[in-house]
Each structure stands twice: as C-alpha cells, then as structure tokens.
Length: 204
Image (cartoon, rainbow, N blue to C red; front, side):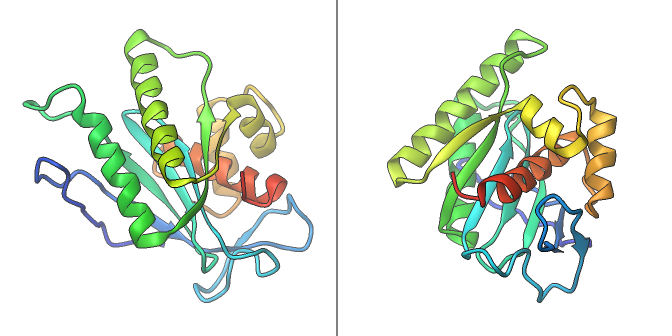
C-alpha cells in the first residue's frame, strides 16, 4: 500500500531520505509459506517476540526492509549519492544519521542483517560498499546491536530456490509473496528480511 514520502534533514541541512512504501504481512504456522497482505492491525508473526529487525542491501541506493516491534513490515530505498559540493565522507555521515533516525523513530533496533557481497561490478561500487559496511558495523558496535552479513546466494536460494537468480527473478519472487518493491535493491532487502525471520527468528 502506498505510504507518504518522508524526508529527514541530513548534516548539510538538505533532505536526502525517501521512504517509498509500507507493507503489512502475516505469517502462517509453516515457515516458508508465502505470506499474504492483511489488515494493518495484524502482526507479521504473533508467536514471535516483538523486536525491530533491519535488513539492508548496501549501496549508493540502499534497499531496506524493517520488521517493527509491532509486527509491521516497511521497506523502501534511500540514496546516499553525494551532492555536487559534498566531500567524499558525507555519504557515510548521512548513512550514520539515517541509521540513528531509524533507531530513534522505529527502534530500538534489535538486530541488523546486511547482504554480504563478495564481488562487485566495479572498483567504485566495491569501495562504496566497503565504506557503508564499515560505517554500519561501527554504528552497531557502539550501540551493542547484533549484526551479521548473509551471502547473496543464500538469500536468492531462499527466495527463488536458485542461488544464482537474476534481478528479474528476484523481483518476481518477492512480488509473489505479496510485496511491491520499486526496484531490485528493495526486493533484495525484503528477501533478506524474510530469510532472517523465517530461518533465524529475526535475531542475529
């Protein structure tokens, strides 16, 4: 269902975060069974402890999915592309600020899962991923928040049955679960969150 776009002010005073949409899902007794859209008052999993879990597909456009303490799942994308007059470190300061805002508004965050990428298409993408991961893990360490990386193939296999599924297949698999991701970044974050909930109980 559509969600009003929210904006937070970054360290430079300019808005940089866009929340694309929100979803609500309910689980069934059997793990792995596709979840169905339900009324917003119904939790994702009533038999699980209420925790706020964050899943991230790190990159310049970061996909995110959040299971809040009240059982609602929200997801979207956020851009950390530097502005024309920004220094190279502003991307990571904004990411830190974004994590802090998520923790303040929807937390406290009990666990963070991120997509563990071993190969990148280019050097720049590799550097950006490494910087974001370092920022994320430092942020979590300072606050005592458990975190863990999950291999891409593990996420894809859980979502599609194939560890080498392409972007279109991943998008289709997440849509089949009742979600409406805007792009592959959001789809990957949702897939990671579902993997964490259905195989790990959500907590790292």
